[in-house]
Each structure stands twice: as C-alpha cells, then as structure tokens.
Length: 218
Length: 218
Image 1 (tube, one colour):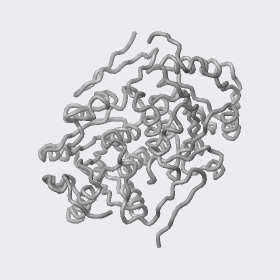
Image 2: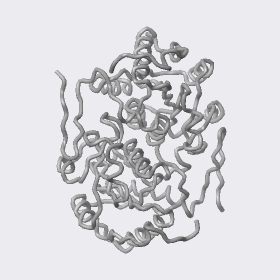
Image 3: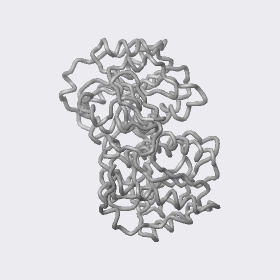
Image 4: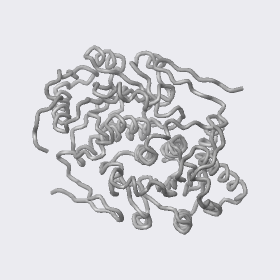
C-alpha cells in the first residue's frame, strides 16, 4: 500500500510505553511504533487496543487465544494480557509471523495502571459486557476515539464496571466475549476491517467459492 | 410481542425431522415448531441453523459452547452438533431456560445426512472458513434463504469444502469460528438481531453505562 499522510498522521501520538511490567520496553516500543505507522497506512483513524482480564492459564488458553486472534484479524493494534501466560503470546506471534502485520501481545500487564494511563493520555476505555448499553446505541460515541477495549473472562473485578468510561453490550444476552469483540470491532469500522490486507505475510489465501487455495510466499 | 402474520408465515415450512439420530423425534419436532413460530413473531424472514462439526469432547467444550450461545443470542434457531456430547446441550439449554427463547440443540447428528436433507428441502448450505469468499461480497446471495451454517473446529473433513453451496470467510485471516459466526449472523440480519428480545426469560438486564442491573422474574 502506498505511503500517505492522513488525519491519523497529524494526531498526537499516545505513548504506549510502561503499560506493563515487561522487562524489555525497547522491543515493545519498536512494535508499537510499527503499529502506529501501520494504522496510518491503512487510513484508520482510531487506535484500538484490547485489554484481556480475568484470564486463567490453562482453563482460558483457547478462548484468550481466540480473543487475541480476533483482535488482530479485525483491526486492533495489540492485546494487553493481565496475566502471566507467555504461551498465549507465542501462539499469536506465530500467526502474525505467518500471516503478516505487526499485532503486538504484551503479557503480565497491570490492568489498573494500563487503564489509568490510557485515560490520562486522552483515550476512551470501554468494557464489553452484556450488562452495558447496546452497541448500536453507542457506536457513534466510540468512533474516532482511541479505544481500550476491556474483554473479561468469566470473573471480572467489579471495579471494572465503574472504571470504564462506558460498558457496552453486543445484545443483552449471554454469549461469548469473542463474538462480542468481533461485533464491536466490526461496527466501529463499518465492516471495512474485513477488506484489510496485512503486510509481510508468508501465506496468502485466494478466496474460493468451493475448495481451498493458499499461496505460500518463498 | 404481539402476534402477527408476515412473509415468513406464508412461506413453505421446511420440515426439520429426522436430521439426526435422536431417539425421541417428537420432542425435537416440538422444539422446532416453537422455533418456527418464534421466527415468525420476530419478523425475521430467514431460518438460520448452525451445524457444528469436528467437535472433540473435552478439548472443544468451551469453544463449542460459545458457538452455540452465539448462535442463540444472534438469532439462529438451533445448533446441530455432529458429536456425542450431551453436556454441551445441557449448558446451552440452561441458558435458554434462564434467558428465554426456544433455541434447540441436537447432539449426535449425522452431518452428511443433515446437509443432504437441508439441500433437498431447498435450503442453502454455507461453510464458514477463512478460505471462502469474503462475507461482504456474498451477503446478499445468502439473505432471504434458509441457511445451514457449518462451523468447523480445527479439523474439518475436506468434503465439506465441496458439499457446501458456498464457502464464506469473515476476512481471509485466521481468527476464531466464534467471531466468524457472529459476523455472519450480524451481517445477514443487518444488526437487527442485537435488538431482539427473548420470550419467557427469568432474568432481564437493564442496560447501564456504568455498573450492573438485572431484574429477576419471580
């Protein structure tokens, strides 16, 4: 995709360092700088980051991996995981290496600190929960904001319901945080994220009505 | 919701008996008749059923439960599970009892037979896969059809890619079958499913910007 400047290029860059306890912030900054330029190239005007809380290693491994992969595929810049589970990061990083883009995963994040810093830097914090206001009613107030999207597992600290600027529901029925995240990202971006391409991929799919075709880059 | 007749009321009813090996088809028919009337009341003109294949008991328990709950919350009539795992049905039926509606789950379904019968009765069979045509490009050809939506786990029998009338992708990137199902159901119904209400619920949420409020019916 050709380089261009756009609204995102002239916006104040929200620094993302020190959100977590990662011992190697240099690497993280590197990812994040790439992430921001990627957002600009795609001409998206929002920065979207997922904060995954309540994750229990082993039990939530697959669901949290689905949360991360969904975030990546549908246009988020990265996932902050408020748990010490490096295997989640490994699986998602493997996908990014094969399929492109520069989605970041940071583990062992202090969620209170992450929320506080995001707000201090002017970002909006939303919490996906069936108890929140219905997505179609609040989509417009989230658009054009830098969004931290909190995605809880079964147990969420009660403080989250008040710390978030907005609790948002994908329908007021119990279903899945993976589904809710997908709907939020899709509505925010009006479906444009489904046509997004990823740079630097090693594999590319040729969409087919029947059968299956993949191009392996060498 | 007031009873009314509409386009759906005058369409040929696709009989749904005998799709699986359930020893008690009478009970299933009962569920299905209720399901059809529910569709009519909601003024939806499609019948949407999920066929879950490749499910491995234990390993896929939580993801398949998320698939079923997402199908229910986002307007499908039921889920056919091509595996013998009655616990999945129990968890989803528990949710339906508490939160309303008449979503059905049938286990131990013969997937080949289910696909064959669906097609014979004029329904369309679509398979959700990252290798398919992109959702925004094919949404209109799925709308106003009775859809069987095949949702595979990690391993899907290769025959599925050809048996389906259409392979459809929610973006050509790996992510989650739960997310893909949510996006398909949402795009098909233009987001109307998020405002849907469920009859007979014991609990109802009062949507809140902050905090949490639930009404328990007694």
